[in-house]
Amino acid sequence: MRTRRLRSAGRYLARWLVDTVGVLVALSAGTFALVLLARGDPAAMLAATRAGRPATPEQVEAVRAELGLDAPAPLRYLRWFADAVTGDFGVSLRTNTPIGPEIADRMGVTLGLVAGSAVLALVVGVAVGVAGAVFERGLARGALRTAALLATSVPAFWLSYLLVLVLALRLRLVPTSGMAGSTTWVMPLAVLGLPAAGALSRVVAVTLREALDRPYVLAALARGSRPTSIVLRDGLPNAAGPILSVAGFTVGTLLVGTIVVEQIFGWPGLGAYFVKAAAARDVPALQASALVLGGGFILANRLADVAQALIDPRSRRDAETHHRPPRQRWRQPVRSGTGETTARPRTETT
Image 1: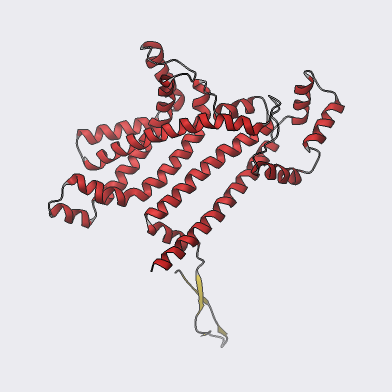
Image 2: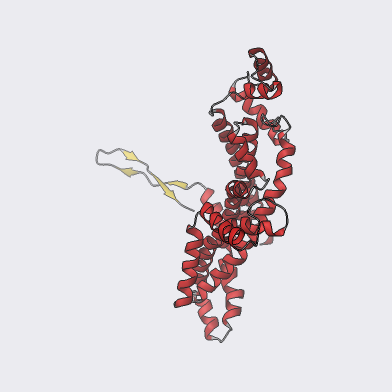
């Protein structure tokens, strides 16, 4: 039995790795193609940056040959992908410096912001969701549902404007922008974390309510078990699978949401770097930052799938069943009205 489980887990992880690599390769090809279709000549921009004035045609052609832009697009993609795998994203057209170290310096700021927002979303979302599942009806349940709906529906830019107006300008508790001191974390964490907490709380409330309505929970209540222990021991572990899946998607959404939040509050993270590269038509920097942000989004979701499969073996079996092609068996020959015999396949789902 143990060998069978290990073999099943090994097949799942191998399929997970192949799927993840395939999605990341597709993301890199899509990113390269989209940026390739954008307007502007990267060679002319880099030549002008180096010369400090509009470059001559000879200087532009020299830069184009240096960057390999005179090669066909498929060959350029293969070269770019091979360099990107090793962390070499080329030189920024805006700053004329290597892109890899720039992204590495800004990645710490973005990951710190995402980690803090994820902790806030998990703590608040799970707490509100558990309370919403326990209170089946009444004023408390209505208030929790309204708060979760408001947190999910409010746009990030509007919430940012409200927090700046109240906390920074009216109460003077935090600075309006910048990253200097612990108080500067309050508004970015709230803008990123509260909408995610609202969405997560609704999923927790629904899945936990379904788990608490199952017969074994009702039997435990009949035996006199305490409601708190039932929620912690029986309800949350059975609802952990869907919650983990949504949590992985939430982390990926937080990573992409840093593009707006870092720009609003003036944080020197990867999201702000992406916006500056897009505004300056810095094609290599735009490709690199889009690939890193998109890859982080995909990895967060895929890691959540692995965690869900480790906690709940049913999701692993579902994934194996989903990938397995239907088996066909041939029925016995059937004689038609004209005397000819035919054999029709019968599809069976295993």
